[in-house]
Image (cartoon, rainbow, N blue to C red; front, side, top):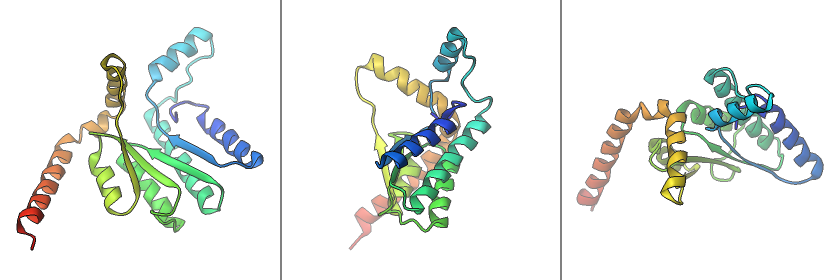
Length: 185
């Protein structure tokens, strides 16, 4: 939950524990979507607001954590990470870090994940270039799943604002597949 002020510290503590305990560190790195709940708990308990002051600080914290984990992987530390983001800039940042450290998309322990129906162009592009890309589908009772999906939509409103662009890309991909289906030899 990179939107929390103390997450960078907790990440460092957990990385040190894994190193000192001689076990593999694994994480699904997310920005998070429980800000209202975290804030209300912080206020009720008198601990204050645990959430970063701005989205820019959260973006920086997320990208810093991505870079740190990729650098440690390149150094040979036993780490696996799922970069769970719908944010194209963060995914591109991760790809640049992988290139900088010459990490192979197929053999490195770095994975990418997005919710089915959100930022599909990222997932499909990553997969097309050999990166380990996954779609996840929440399941359960509608009354339990809908609040989760609403939080994801709120968290990713910037990703959703690019829906016109994504529709255009889907149409291009559909045309490409239909051409291949009907005009291949």
